[in-house]
Length: 220
Length: 220
DNA sequence: CTATAATCGGAACGTCCATTCCGCTCGCGC
DNA sequence: GCGCGAGCGGAATGGACGTTCCGATTATAG
Image (cartoon, rainbow over all chains, first blue to last red; front, side, top):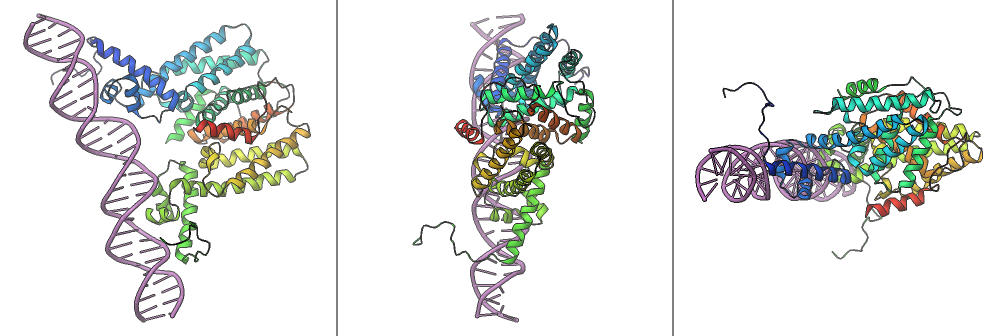
């Protein structure tokens, strides 16, 4: 009881080897299970697929929320890579559009992502800078396409995010019934984002910061 | 045990007056509760708002599923009215678009509808002809707008349904954070449905029958 | 090889819900 | 009015799930 008030001690001794291995197994199983079944899947199923007991799952990830976030973190990282690769490309318009086709496929393959992307306002651990980076990359992707005249000027990043989070949810509830149908929808949305004779949009374009603020306020 | 094999007897005696009244109260409360909180809301909350006990709720609607469907039925009916009114209008394009603005507002106001519209493939009772009528009306709405050159020809009813069910879900999970943002998305989707320099869509247009078949198959 | 403590498995617990049951109430036909 | 059975409220039941606990196991330091 006479120790310093540091919670996460810095000089943590390294985990026992089996513990480290199990942690990885659990994480991989969770990614698989949540992607297939969604966040609703029982924690016990994750344990089963990892070949460990529930107790082990819960020791490594004290709450389900934390486990989900660990999985999301991996996915956001992979997404950030894609977004940054798209930003490297010399052709802003196609880069923008192909990124969103890829994103949609990714969401369809990973149900968790589809379910939580819109809601991940409140990642408890580890992710604020990741989320910020992803938001920034996606914002720049839009802006670059707009500067190139490939996306209409009256669009905000929040518009794009909402449209694709919607499509992802629709996909998640029914299962990716017909990938082709989903891709048609992606194409239609992208057409709507193009500058050709757009209708007048109500309201002002929003960025992610404004969107997050709105979501947080709504939560109370 | 020696009675005829009729489940729902035809010669049902009329309900006692208080029972009939309670049934209505429960239905109204359910509509309110599920619209606000989604289908996840506890049945007990419905009872509380109706001013009756859970027992009463469950006697009138033996399972939650049945209660949800009763609520959905009311909403589908109201939606069918809107769709048919839109079909009466002389201006197919604006009629089409305004119908979908209205639909989106309606979905935003009624979370159940947003959550279940895509999934309502399997209404157990009472609704097949209602759903069929709604599908038909929505299909004709699309076709009429296409004939008038106001919606691109390579669109199927399933495309429109999926896009709007997606938007509805996105709205449901975060709450209708910013109605204006949602309406912007409606406008963007509708722009994507217009004939102005559309991109080539992958796959073939689907109608509702094909979509339903796919969903049913996926369920197994 | 042994002692020790980290880690494990999975049974037990608590919570949240839908659904069921049952003693009491009260609308309705006489 | 009166009696009785349809209906009522809400406690009890049962199942699903997240989390906790503890005796058994096993990696590791010495």
